[in-house]
Length: 432
Image 1 (cartoon, one colour):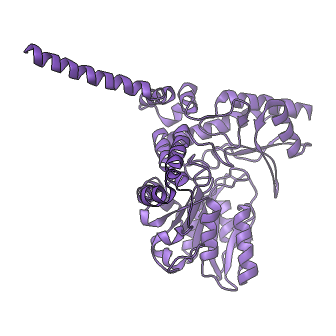
Image 2: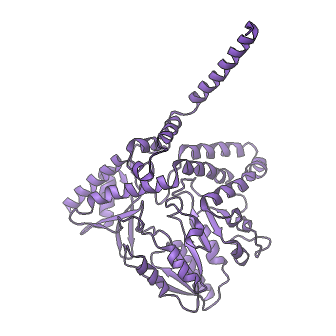
Image 3: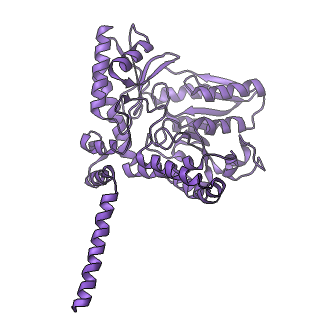
């Protein structure tokens, strides 16, 4: 090779090497570590990986968790991973350079690709997905948009979410519809029993059944598809509250048999705070009035549910990064890890005298969420002790027959965090 050409070749190789080296230097260490861990885990089953603390330690590095406390209230709202936080900041900075230009002419163009991404992980048509701010907005769009009349019946459970219950009560007062209540003895590991409690409430006047897929109060998983099939066999529509199941359990929306579905994305998908999603089966769109008025309320275009006006585009667009993170971890890996973490601490305390669990430990009936109480002590007593003595943040549940603390870890939670919880509950129970 002539000296001139050889020199050009070596310079070129050197340039490529420098570029590769620079790329590794500019990629944050936590990201490089997680990339490596994911490659190493490719041939490991989700069940075996669930208890691999080394692997999940790299996932933890993807979050900016507080060193001052152990956050075990991810069921309320989850922190977003670094890539989501950085996207929000980047998009917000861009918007503030020239808001009306960058929001409406640049960032808003990302809405349709985002719709496709949400539809992909939901297993449905993009033309059935609308962006919302949370599960309450999504579900209340359907609740207030359904063309119900006086005397029509809707079936609800006493463990449904209060915002939804209050919306239905408002329709009861305003429109004269009738709410028929289902009660459940929880926890339950009997699909037939739970399904029968709903179907017994169905009458010839029932127009819709409202199903909460995972109760926020206890983490109970409800056999949504079985109830939905029973409802559809009687010509009854199905609205599913997926706030605590979406990106928590592995499923697609059509697998649940939903006509309508609403969820928050700032819980288990770990998108930015203030993001949600509405699903409406394509043939049902035209009959639902939008919560925020559209030019044609009976339009069959799913976008009629997105007439919010000026909104935080930078928050919405960052959902895409949350989807990437979710798919990178893997739906089944995530579900198995969350189930493992719940059973890790709950199994350790369940036989301690005076400890009462309100949640099943059996697969298929709960996953990340569980509630624990101490006989003879109030929920607030336990809450104050955990936070005051151990800096463990949970949330108190006092609803119907449930009186305890809801513990909800997420993928960044370590077993060392849960060891501290076990010690704290054990100490409090013995003092009680």
